[in-house]
Structure formats: C-alpha cells, structure tokens
Amino acid sequence: MKSLHLLLAPLALAGLLAVPTFAREITHAMGVTDVPENPQRVVILTNEGNEALLAVGVVPVGAVESWKGNPWYDYLMPQLEGVTLLGTEGEPNLELIASLEPDLILGSKVRQEKVYEQLSAIAPTVMTETLGAPWKENLLVYADAVGKSSEGAAALAAFDKRIGAIREALGTSVEDTISLVRVSPARTRMYLKTSFPGAIFEAIGFKRPATQDKDGFAEDLTKERIPELAATRIFYFSPDPTDEEAEANLSDWTADPLWLGLDAVKADHAKRVDDATWIAAGGIFAANIVLDDIEATYGLASTR
Image (cartoon, rainbow, N blue to C red):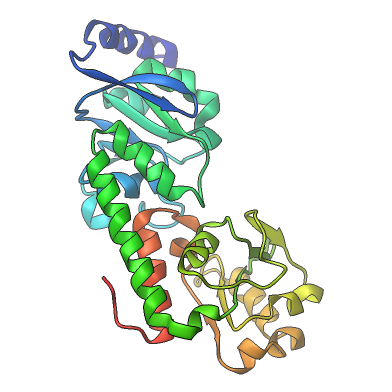
C-alpha cells in the first residue's frame, strides 16, 4: 500500500495546478482559506456539518459516520445514498478522503486540528471552532464555504420561526423549569445551558433549575444529587435501548427513591427522549426533531 505522504503529494500538486478561476477567502477557526466559488465534491467530517450541508441542498461525496446509526442516523439515510463513509469524526480516513479528490473539506478544530495540515494538502479545508451549542453559527460557516449563505440563512430563519411559534403556543407553560439528564453506565450528567438541548430550551424561553442554569456543557451527577433535578418537567436520555447494561443502569436510577420522589416523576412529567437526536447528532435536522418532541410533550400543534 502506498504511504499516505506519497498519496497526498501528487494530489497536492494537482491542486496547485488547478486553482479555481474564481475563489473566495473564508476566515475560519484555523485561519484563512481560499475556497472554490462553487465546490462540487465536498467532504464533511462532522455530524452537525453533514446535516448543515443537506439543509442547504448539498450532498457530500464523503462523510464521517454518525455517532449512532448504520452508518448514519436513520432520518438522514435516504439523503445519503451513494455517499462514501470516511470513518469517525475523531479518526477520519485520510487516504480514502484523498481518493475522492474533493475540492473542499469541512470539519471542526475540536475534532481534526491535529490532521488539519494533511487535510489541507488534499483540498482547501475550512473548520469551525467547536461543536454543540454553536451549531447555528457553524451551519452558517459551512453554508458560506459551499457558496450557499442565503440557503443557510433561510434554514435558520425557518427554525427560528418554529421557536417563536412554539413559545407563543406554550403560553404560561414557557415559565416551566426544564431539567435535562443523561443516565449511562459510564457516568450520569445533567446538561447545562450551552449544551445542544440546553441552547434550544433557552431559545424558546424555558427556565432551568438553579443547578443547571449556568453556562457550560454538562456536570456529573451522583444519586445523592438527584434532588437537584427538581423541575416542572424532566427530559432524560440513555445511550441505547438495546444495550442491556445501559438499560439496567437506567432502571436502577429511575427506581431510586430520590428519583421517585421528584414532583415531575410523580406527575408523570419525566419523559425519556432519543439520545441520538437530543445529544449526539447536534445538527439542524436533530434540532427540529427536538422541537417535534417538545410539541408532542405539551400537546401543541406541529409547526413543521
């Protein structure tokens, strides 16, 4: 097998000889990069970026696998037929990426900073800073890089319109406090304001319990601290309903007297939601599914 540097060298040279006639400068987390005016072969290396591209009408030639799914989230599979699987966010397959001869690569500094130079040798590479709560800002970066800024803005405007409609439909229920918790064998955590779901609830205008009403992604939780989850409603998620260990661990937590003593649990206002869409995916399709779940929970008409 050819070594990676031997594979990348001719591709980098070809890139130098075939600089697009029309190029734009994009300022991003790793610097400034000239990108093609109308890229045709885009590689995406984040889950949220995959959703961003599809939302603006761009199907990538290659994408990393979803954190859950085979190989992508079920709700994305119909749109990704024929797309090449490129490994994971943390370990993208550089040789496979090079073989696709992309004209633009999109990723995130928090995931691929260490291989940025290798990626840039393959094709112009644009990266966001991090993932999660800033998914909307990141969508605009991805959309701008592929020349679809107006489509990106339109997608976000539609999402924000849903947020406003839900806020209005909730009436006084928007004053509810919302608790977010993920129960897993590895660790249990409550999710704060700058997590993916936390940012969505804040945008709607919901309140958060005092222990979760702060910036940050998540905070570890022990059973002794279950009372800190007290809220009008609790949304909880767990890694995988088919994972026996995870389900046994979740059952242990939800059978704990402190959990059963929570007012939201006693009022049947503790709802299990999908772990993949609520915490793993992090993109605009997942965000809209979270809104669907909120509407269903409160008995609201769909704003889709």
